[in-house]
Image 1: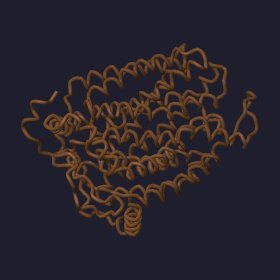
Image 2: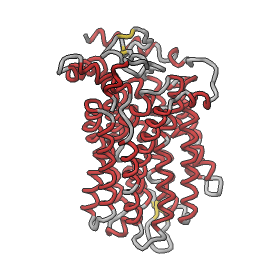
Image 3: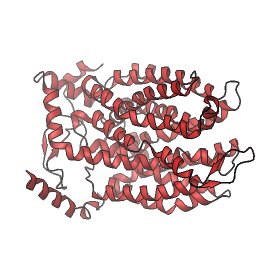
Image 4: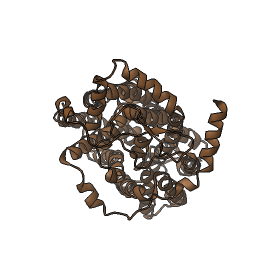
Length: 485
């Protein structure tokens, strides 16, 4: 078995350059591709987009108000970043619990439970009075946040027409940037203009999940999930466990790879975003308004990049597009970190254009590489274990930053050269992600719908994976209509 694995590994590595050849074809106008989606498919995309957007909003409310929370709880900003780290560390627990629930019991109700937890815990964050309470609530929030990504990716993509997957993947992923953008806007609108300051932002954040819950309540399960459910009903009762064992046997190496590459992706996003508002305020002395405008521009670049490269990945390949984004991002590090005039607006726009351009490919890239019967679980757990590996990003940057002190601010507060630390950090991350992506597999345009569990497909060109699962077609038996919720 060892020899066989060794041979497969050599075969895999020998095809890394040749496998970067673009799939080809004329680059299509995205508008006709988007018109291919039915009303039902659009609703699945929109509810997934809303859920993922509010996950990001809830996460970044702490990043945007770290200075204010630290002052209110009488701790340092570094202490508050441990709250961010704690959320990232515990997301993998939520991915495990909610991912398995989504694959076993459906996309609908685990999603709704996630949103209920969002509302309750965001409200609770606004009422904390001690640092210990803050850490406790954010720890629970980490579990809730960890469960929604895999569910959202499966809900939005598994019924999506193949030709439109790339752009839909980019649009879905940029719910993250849109959530960040909303956090920036409402931070400016509420934190400095209301009597309760930062607490108001968290209280507001508890409201929209109620609307998202109502939206998901009126939608059924996806066709792909109902196909899998139908197969389980007509097979042995322990089919789910048998498929889990077979999935691990055939996909364990891909699962390991997905965790490693998602660690790189999460280091890239958190390393470039979490501490940036703090750097603008404390190091560059940006006003609240200028910080808000800068972060809005950054997130507009992120949204544009995710959609742009998500679409192009259909024609240039998933891995090639990610690697190009790494090169582009690396070239933009210097202006992003060191420009001090108004040119910083262009620098942050294009840096996030590259970072989230790569991220726009992630949902479909992970979905295409995941076992069909465990898509929500594998996509979610890979993403969140990557989050776990990168959970200390902001803490690492603040800790190292304290070794580069700057003259104290006018009010006597300490200042550090976070820009230099982030520049070095991001350079290392771009190189790491480029190499890992180059060495990895790709299953461009494989079917995501399920006709039969673990139907063999011999068309794989990558030696490491061996045979993979053909994920059926989009046409399902009419009997499934009776199973739709």
